Amino acid sequence: MRRTHWGRWIGVAFILLWTLIPIYWTINTSLQTDAQVTSRPANYLPPTPTLQNYAALLTADTDTAQAMRASIMNIVIECLAATIVTVLLSTLAAYAFARMRFRGRQVLFYAVLATMAFPAYTTLIPIYKIMSWLGLVNTYTGIVLVYVSGFLPLATWILYNYMSSLPRSIEEAATVDGASRLKVLWHVVVPLARPGIVSTAIITFLFAWGQFLFPLVLSSDLSTEPLTVAIAALQGRHTVPFSLMSAAGVLAIAIPAVIALLLNRYIVSGLLAGSVK
Amino acid sequence: MRLFGDDAITSSIGNTLLYVLIGVALSTVLGIAFAVALQRPFRGRSAVVAILVLPWALPGVVEGIIWVSIWDGNTGLLNSVLTSAHLIDHYQVFLGHNQLLTVFLTEIVQVWQITPLSTLLILAGLQNIPAEIYESASIDGAGPWGSFTRLTLPLVRPGITVAMVQAVIATLNVFDQPYVLNGAAATGSSVTMQTYFVTFQNLDFGEGYALSLLITIATLVISFIVLKLVYRPVEF
Image (cartoon, rainbow over all chains, first blue to last red; front, side, top):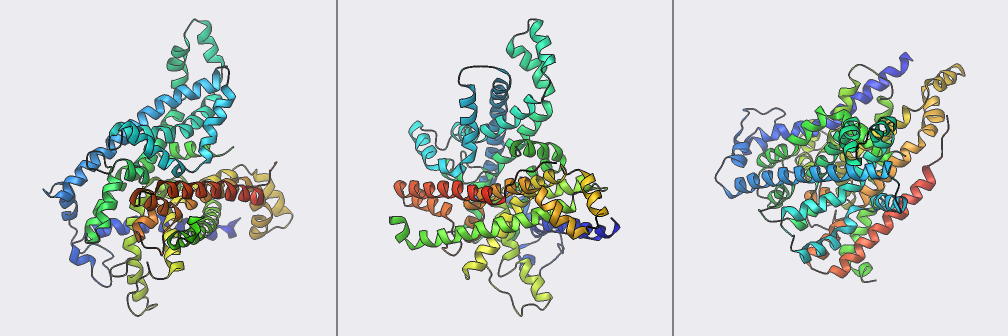
């Protein structure tokens, strides 16, 4: 199979260039001054690398910097809360669907799965109406509830597949010893299902971090606006230089990029458990 | 029927169909190519997969911002490279003038985001193919291209189907990338963007509902067509 090797290496080189050039370009732009960014031809390396754009976004005493700091806080709080609640509820739901027999189990399970076939934005207008009726627009509770309701079906499906593949014998032994359902779940199933739970948590967190249209509609003022919405507003002004925009971009991709690179195997296994079949 | 009389909405429907066509075709072709490149184990493969997945994990809005600085007419990377290579005489404005070019360049950004998942889905299908099938094919005299078209492609059809359906759903609902790259300009506007403008800026909730129903039905119909055309059960 020697002759096929060059084809593979061209493919691998293309994957790396296609993925990394745009990210490199943003980092490169973020380390230049406004004047350097306008040079023709462009600077392929920052001529005098500077962190001034990051300082202008993070530590300056301007409206822009205040909005950035607030929106970074908001996105972290909303993503963590959505992840914790989703993982907790989907673990309970997946266990019930995988192991318990109750009336309406199948109908309920298919109903949960069926919601995944519809595009998420279908629910945008009804959700907005419900949230304004409940007075939850521009609150953490509101946006977290929306994220949880959106991510719960996929999370339940991934964990259901994971738990169904675990051997029943250990659980049965624990039940015979007199442990309650919840005790079995907590002391036996959760430790065994840990890789699946970690995958679910990471994928949920990354989905929440990437949200834009829902928070654009539901949490668009400084008290709850996440980083994605704040950055789009910054870019929408058209007067913000690319150097500053790029630094804001790097801030918004830093956390998901590190998670994706370090915890990659959990993402891959979770995505495959979530979509194949 | 009010929907089809409105120019902004008619052009957004045309744009969205182009987004779907370009996005599904490109992400599937790239997904297959990337998956084949990663099919056999080699040293460093898991690092390449980790890098490959990166665009999937990043927010669409920020990917729009990243690519604006590549496509930009005054300072963009593309202009700089094309000018240095003497392929164009002077800097060009790529976005916002020509409809097809605007949609194409905007969709590239979304393809960048959705191709990792397509690749993983197709790669998972490839790894289910037993190695003996390739061995007996090469004994029968099939070259690399022959075994790709006559073995790999037919055997990985279920994976390709799932990849194409996720691409259909993502592209039909495209919002973040055209919102950042074009703003409200009609040249690249999608139906989901129109839904947003109509509902939350003009406050016409009825028309907004109608548009989002249109997208839902289109998603189900096009996904079903892809399923019928591409899916074939496979047994090893």
